Image 1: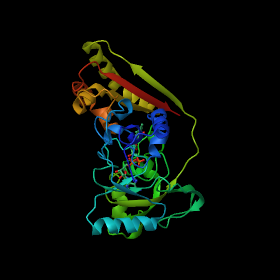
Image 2 (image 1 turned 120 degrees about the vertical axis):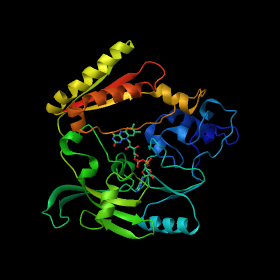
Image 3 (image 1 turned 90 degrees about the vertical axis):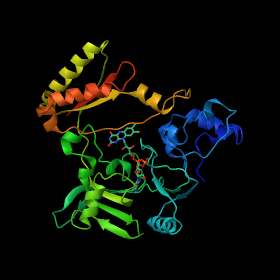
Image 4 (image 1 turned 180 degrees about the horizontal axis):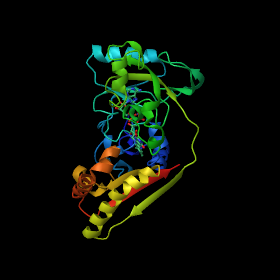
Length: 326
Ligand SMILES: Cc1cc2nc3c(=O)[nH]c(=O)nc-3n(C[C@H](O)[C@H](O)[C@H](O)COP(=O)(O)OP(=O)(O)OC[C@H]3O[C@@H](n4cnc5c(N)ncnc54)[C@H](O)[C@@H]3O)c2cc1C
């Protein structure tokens, strides 16, 4: 039965040994992914999850599903989907629980937990859609972490290596899926191609359950990475910083550098979600890929966009930038 991750530390269900483990691992992503009820960002289990700091609190189910199946075989997927449809249950699917918009948990839902479907197999020669053999291919089971079949690939799967080989989802040759009517299907560019298109960024948990995926792999490149954190001490300098950075982006791209901007609006999110929560932070995050044509041809619009976004922040905004070249 899934329970909120801090259950063992609450008044009603206190257990010293389990609570010590919980306390030690509270911010540990791997440990969180191993708990059937846990989300990576615990605010999605329950807002105001004070338990770890307050042994007097009691524990509610919050947004944690009420029942889960530890699915290890595709047949389980089919049975669960049919069962959920028959009894009108809300079905959610979870691998790591790191979905930043909480799409892998829901109140009063039925959870298909894929954590243990971690099969991985290298395929030296693979042929799909009548094309010549593709070498260096891997088949990943549904639960392979991190960056596998679910939210990562179906969410588009951008990375700092995207300017080199494209998105993660661009490497997919085939999906093995169970559709919402419980049927098992092979999906590729030449078989069920509409579904293939939908799965290529159409968001996890939307179209079907992916059982496994076949995708191209590449030898790790040699890269240089930098992580810059530049702080502008006042508004004027901030505007100058954004303007100069955006104008510099085409040069970086020409030099094969990939750039990720991470403007920090943490304080705004924190205020929006829980005005007086002393437990730490809440997380709500989105990301967008900015087309090269926009970076090159609509620089003023991009500058305005960054400046307008900044106004959501209540105090100074910091801008985190990753560069990767190789
Ligand atoms: C610290 C951090 C860094 C990140 N960096 C990147 C990054 O660089 N690039 C990037 O693209 N993303 C990044 N992400 C976002 C990440 O890809 C998403 O959080 C993604 O949803 C995680 O996938 P998951 O399946 O493990 O998550 P889960 O939370 O388990 O599931 C996410 C969604 O996928 C659905 N789903 C899961 N498995 C399946 C399945 N087998 N079939 C159908 N639907 C399924 C779930 O129902 C849910 O809707 C990052 C996230 C974090 C927390």
